[in-house]
Picture (cartoon, helix red, strand yellow):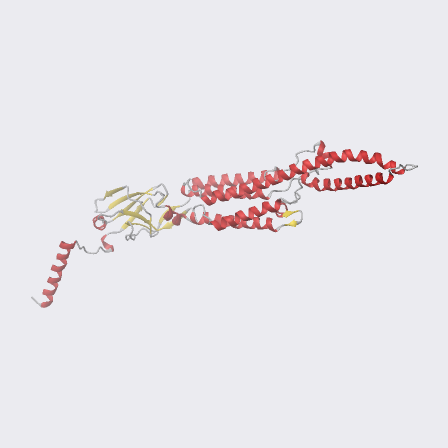
Length: 398
């Protein structure tokens, strides 16, 4: 035997010794096994798929003591284990998987289903848990992202809801500030008029509350259409709804308080005017008496004070009239951005932050199929904008 032959024999004996002593095994090669088929070729969440492997024995050898999981687009879907393994006469096997979205697999499914379309064409394989995917010839598996049976009702319901909302906002006082429903005797005496066809101005607080309501409702429904997940509401969502509702409620309370105190003041002033005017009318002729009364100078001072007081009352009642009338609408944008001095910075700031965060919110829902989680700083900015709006609303005249 040549030295080369003896060297090869010694190497083989050494390798065999390693196998016996340490369980060493021959590395498995791609041609040892392969995923060759998936049935059905189109499936989505909550469907079952059957994955065919052409050589099952090498896979069993590889998976000894480990678990096999499903891989989509080269990504492991955690804890999606085979429900059943059915050997085939040719030495292969069919593995049945249930496509479920659990807490463990939610992140992987969000990456796969994000930016949803109706179907996505992806490679499919199986592999060891925590490892990479096994070789596969299945490169055109059609993952159903959105089912028409759920998307179409979503689109119809949201369209009808939006149309109904816009119709109510236009025809009713759904988004408008409060004001008198009709002219009472007191308001008529005060000189308040309700112009024919005039509408109350739109309320910024109520508009913001409606904005977040529609965005969150539509997003929640859309995520359910794709994932059937009902547990998608986050703390940020609750905070945003709280800010919107709190702003609307706070603004309404400020308006109600101002109107209530203004009405009380106006009633007192009107009562004083009714008492003062006849008294003044009775004393004025006495200034023209001949001969003049002995207390003429005192009478003149008293009449002058009464006239000055009547002027003050008239001026104050004129200031209170717009508050009690509630103002009239000049169009949606003007109503939510303007105060008595025109466009105000605090109102514009609140509108700008609301629109920007709304856009970021919708982008997050579309990309990740989950309600976005805003950090504390962003929520604080939103809260500060709303608080500033309510603070500046207190001195507003209408």
